[in-house]
Length: 270
Image (cartoon, rainbow, N blue to C red; front, side, top):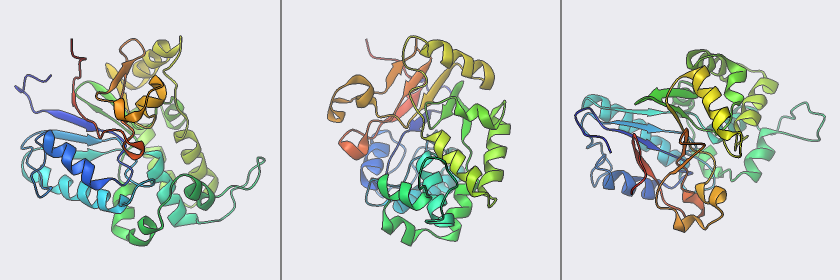
């Protein structure tokens, strides 16, 4: 646990439209009050993406996080956000709809992928230009408390650059452009997972940390219960693996698991 001589840093994984459980978890962490307004003072809070799809109120989650961005800054703290693959899907559906993606693997479009991956019509209906512009400005990779923060447990990020700044700049340029194939490639690469599992997982994690910096990777995207072979309701803590080099924080909220709000650095209880 943090000794609190420095501002606390927390990370939150995939919320997938479940606004009320998110607010409850942030309250338990002392970061918001009963009204869902910032109460964390100078603390730092990071969301690792996937606000939308598979749950009832993805845009409500985005609205909450946008408000916390402003309130935390006014209080001397910060709330920051990474893009997840489902934000790419939300934006791709909004921008391209059912336009066919050139492919040798059969019919593909953002609309088809959005539908089969839990896309919610209510989110598309409520999505505004303000939401879209705000999302375009979010990074894919960041550093906090000596950790490398990312949504997906993949090394595909390196396809867009050799450091966090290059990666974020490259993808931002793609998302503000009109090249459907490049957009689709961002979506496709960010759906990959499990790069740090298996006997070579620690080496792969070390390689990514050497390339991008940080002492430990923190990611969402892959439900912890799926990796452990248990029911999501049994999850009570994040998943430290790959020789301690990777920390998974997706509790599987949309399948009955908890909304994990994890303080960094995290250590397993004895």
